[in-house]
Image (tube, rainbow, N blue to C red; front, side, top):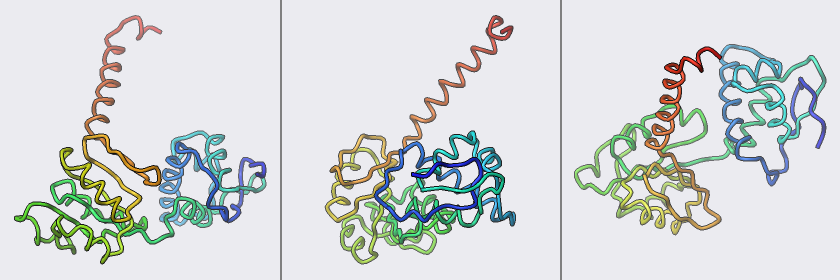
Length: 235
């Protein structure tokens, strides 16, 4: 791996898709990509590592470390070419591939996700939405018609789905997750309030909003206690 200098004009093509990027760095790459998209929208062609780091809310050494996993190189004082760096991060994250997403659960959350326009611009096409309620099946959500969950496997095959979102009650989440895996889906995002079991080859990401709110409440409480503590205020 080449040594990363503070400002770099570009990146080597990723090439080696087997290169391991730590999960924390992957999460930050998505933030860098969002910042780069904003810069592109403003017509900015080059950005320094300090400017990009500031836009992403990290320090520049961390930014350069994260980008080094992509095979970065360059010279001081030139900065990053915004469009090229945007492209290389997109490649590293797999966003240049064809991601066809099915949403399981057409409740309030599922409908909101299906209607989110930001997915398409980031390379994710919502191709199907399912529900078990016969009063919901057949209704329209945006440009999609809600399919019966009984037809899950057939619709997944017809739409060439390769990624799924679970927005269902915890009581049925594992059964539906198993059906997704058996149908060949190996990338699943779950909003279900339970811990799901999947085979080693399946990538499962869990979003638990109640847990995040509980963590937020803890930090808010700590902040309030600090504000009320005269000793802490005096330090």
